[in-house]
Image 1 (cartoon, one colour):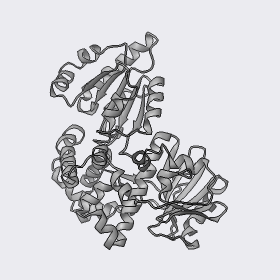
Image 2 (tube, one colour):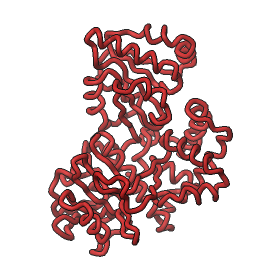
Image 3 (tube, one colour):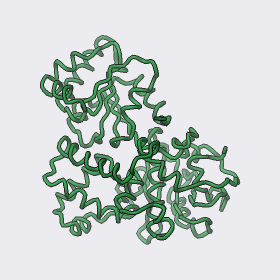
Image 4 (cartoon, helix red, strand yellow):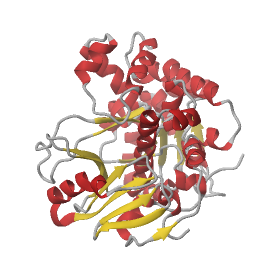
Length: 418
């Protein structure tokens, strides 16, 4: 099966060369194992997976002996490491021993389908010795193989008028997903059904204390209706019939297994407790999973249900932002909303404060009033405001002010050069 080149490859190679241990996490089936094994074709690595019952049993029964048996002359890749937390402390000991011998990089690459927040034993044992990277499902640019990162483009390029040719938005949305789904002719509903069953049957046991995992699906059915919206946690817990502690536990599990993610509200730099509002926004890490949970066909949604199509489109843009931000390290993504309802869907900031506002509009045209929230954001950010854009479904990049632009969604994978 054809394999897509991933934007994370360069950063992962660089980090392995600089650090003794790298933890590459991300959703199941995002391509972590393949990427780990194919970073440098021809390179001799020691690949181990805890998906093997025999290997997992060995690591859990004799973790010290297991880690000591690994070769020290090449990179060891340990796949699905969250299944054997017994090895975490032994990895620390091994790293410290190798440091005394002058070997302080390229020792271990761990992969896992659980967020580090769900594995406190790993982070506690390896603090100061580990770098964490996240691999998400493939982006539109990776699907189109354009090698274009639109976040970098928006910060570094001066936009100018451009008219694009026709493009098939739904083709891109349905292929900006898990590699196996994007590149094969599998039955999509059945694939996602199996995907969720695997997470519930396996990951619940290994990373969470959830007594009734079947209620996770029930909670997901409620969260689907909130995609792209502000989270009212107490109201949602009550609606789902869950005690608040249970609701928070279930939601944390869904976040830590990369099914959903939250965007925090924007705050001025240095004033993190001075947010305009306190509510986070909810999104699904894979838009096609969202559509599957809606029990609908994406073509029917975009043809007959504009409000739902708007939510799906915004979720798609959210995932594209996160996918393109992941290999850049110095990017933070939030949302902006004032107490009187002025809002910007996404705020993308560099560590130095440079800021871009992104508004999403499911329409073939853009009007001046679509920039109202972006202008409020510009005033709040000040001189660090780089530009504001409205992403829409038309075909032309056009200016609405010196730093305000209407940008067609195809820019996400085509940039200005195609």
